[in-house]
Length: 64
Image 1: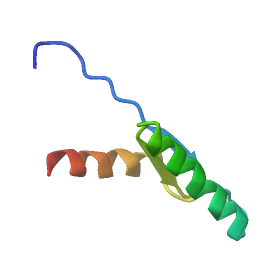
Image 2: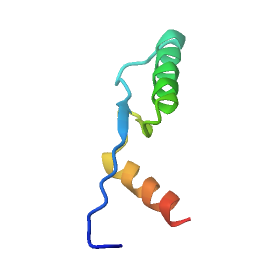
Image 3: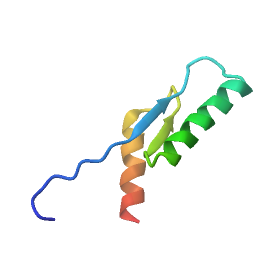
Image 4: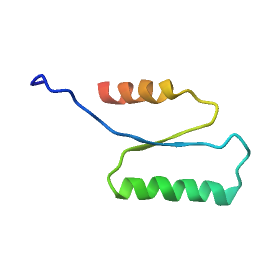
């Protein structure tokens, strides 16, 4: 690296704490699909997950 910091972005869709129906799941998939088409990295985080889990998974994916 040349001494410059690397900045990455990630759109995070956070799940609802209430049960969702098929229409809500379809909306979530459509949103994640639109982000992918636009070239925007994204992730889904369930309401009971920790934000730290996203970074742990990202570090594992980057290391492989």
